[in-house]
Length: 127
Image 1 (cartoon, rainbow, N blue to C red):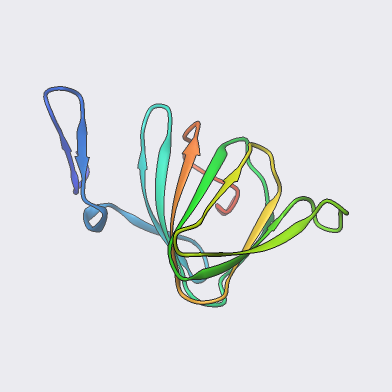
Image 2: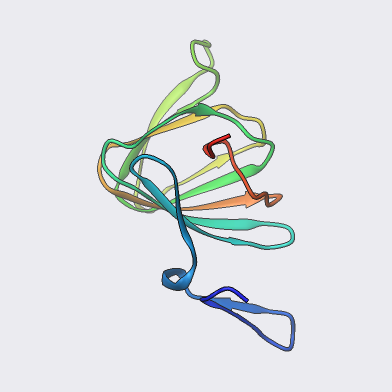
């Protein structure tokens, strides 16, 4: 069993963020994830200037900003429906599956991303 993970007799699993494996799927971005059977949560740290290009994925995504400030683009690049919004601590963005979106960190930002269904990769992983 991986470090930071303790399975209980009930089937529940206790995790410690700081003990979970960290990866860096792109520059200025690190994350730690817990992948369950029907959902996953990612603790994502974006350094100021992190620029996540427009991407999409089948997963529904809930973006919970814990600290910092980001600019999200929602919708296809160049489309009339594309909107930009600034998200700060205490705000949540709900993205349906296959919704194109981008993110730019205006300052160091900590985000909790919740995805359903879970997957080993998301739209930002290197292929």
